[in-house]
Length: 235
Image 1 (tube, rainbow, N blue to C red):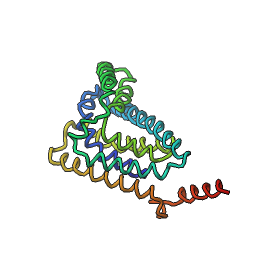
Image 2 (image 1 turned 60 degrees about the horizontal axis):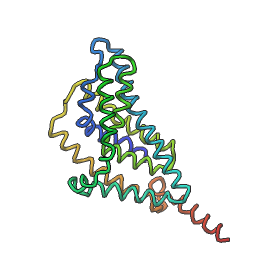
Image 3 (image 1 turned 30 degrees about the vertical axis):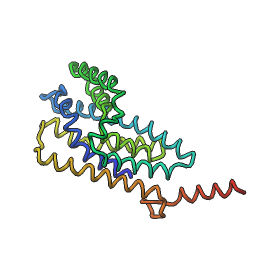
Image 4 (image 1 turned 90 degrees about the horizontal axis):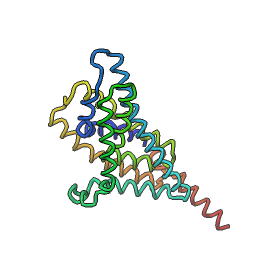
C-alpha cells in the first residue's frame, strides 16, 4: 500500500502543477546562485512534506484507535468504497455537498499568510510557503489521507503521506524551473488516468479489508486474531 502513496504523488503532481503551480512560479528563487537555489527548493519541498507527514500522523493515529476496537478490516473496506464513490459521483452533485466550504475562512487565512511570505526573502520563507502550501485543500491530498487512515498506525500514516509528498517533488521541481512546460493534451491524458488509479486503489483497499488470505495483498491475520479473541471471550 505504501507504493500507492508514491504513485498518488506522481500522478497527483500533474494536478498539483495546475492548482499550486502559480504559487511555485512566484517563489523568489535565487536565479544567480545555483547552490542557494537548490537549498531554497529543498526548503520549500521540506515544508510541504512536513505538513503531509503531520496530517498522516494525525489520521494514522485515528485509524489506529479504530483498529483497537477491531474495525481494521471494516475501515479498509469503508475507505475503499469511499474512494470509489468520490470518483463516481458527478462533480456538480459533489459540489452541492462540499464539506470544504466550512473551512474557506481558514483557507483564506492561509493564502494571506502565503502572500506575506512570498514578499520576504529570508531563509525561512521557502519552508513557510511549502508548509502553508500543504494545508491548501486538494482532492488528491484527501485521497492520500484516506490511505493514511487505513494504515492503522500513526507512524505508518505519517510515512504514507511523506511518500505521497516525495512523489510530487520531481514534477513540481520541473515546473518551478521550466514554468508551464506541459502541453494541454498531455495534462488532459494524465488527469484522465487519476480517477482510474483512485478506483484501482479503492478496490485494493476493499480486497485488503476482506482478509482473503492472499499474502501482502489481502492478509487474513487480523481476521484470525479477531476470531481468536472472540472465542477467548466466549470461554
